[in-house]
Length: 440
Image 1 (cartoon, rainbow, N blue to C red):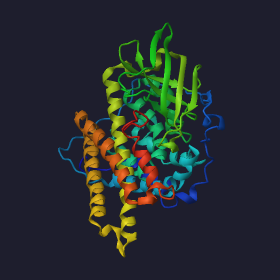
Image 2: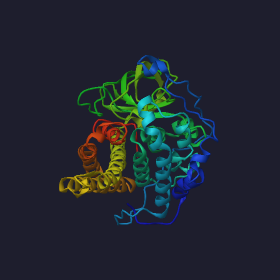
Image 3: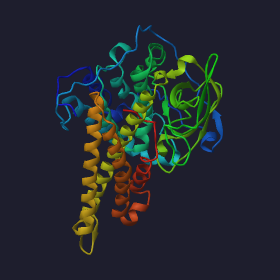
Image 4: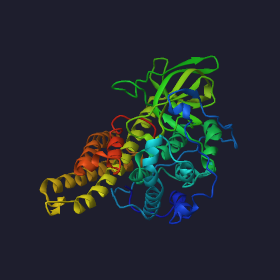
């Protein structure tokens, strides 16, 4: 992580969190009319429905060139101490996750959707504003991958499924800032800086054994007016509500490319796809049947290096989410083993129990270290492929082990829904499966 530096617009962006969500966030919860609906009953039952009724995305200003965020300055230091701004952001998001996400998680898991109004309140945090340049209405002045990783970790400490639902729109806005052309930015980004942030999703995942994101089964072919997409994307967060998707497809056999797809496009339909975990994210299938897109729907010029960056930054996001949920497991089992007694003493006095808790803490610190190092290098524009690969491996293997150990340490209590550890275990198993959805 970069060494502490002077306060800039990036810091001001989420410093507003304290004013919006601070210690009185629960009291303010009912002030704004909810803008997010629940998944329809038909969708829950597996019927395919048309895409969500979308707003009219249109330019509100004319851009001479795309607006980009500059790389963070290279200080030559790798300091894990958050800056003053980052600490403020983490504390506020952690408070929001504890007061809003954690209490709603069990209900969201059971109903396959976030409680009404929760995601509207989450949108008030302005998380996406940090990644949008000032000239486009945001507050960003430089890349903030480390800050985004810390935010993802803090949200996942509340609940991983709801964290994915909260972060899904910022994955789309981040991609538009990083690789969108001036027309795409002018058309879509204004919606992400207003009060009514659209539900949106980065759809890379497909339902295929040993799925490789670099070999999508979804096909895109050129037409006289642009492109035509055919295929099915899987485990798309908030698919039934999403108004805008970034979809990966193989472009005429030449490799993967990214396309902007509005939910109102003819041929777009949604099918519910409840999963083992991430149930609060209301995942669904995105069906694309002869979806006609204009030439301007291609993101990043179809360049291979752009797609590679998207996959890497998405995997980095999942590693940060894994760290947050793993920390939730650790924070839950420590008091449990200290308070739970057997044979007249706390079970933490048993060496096997103490060692298991220590292993969780050790693996968690290793995962966080590698994830933040990768984020810092990405933020500064340095090569970070190796670090992302390590973070992905640790998040996949150790995250699942931590979830399993948490269930084991609770004994019979780990198997029942009275305790949240079983849900965290199911969510952590998604880390090694998921591609896309989040983006740092």
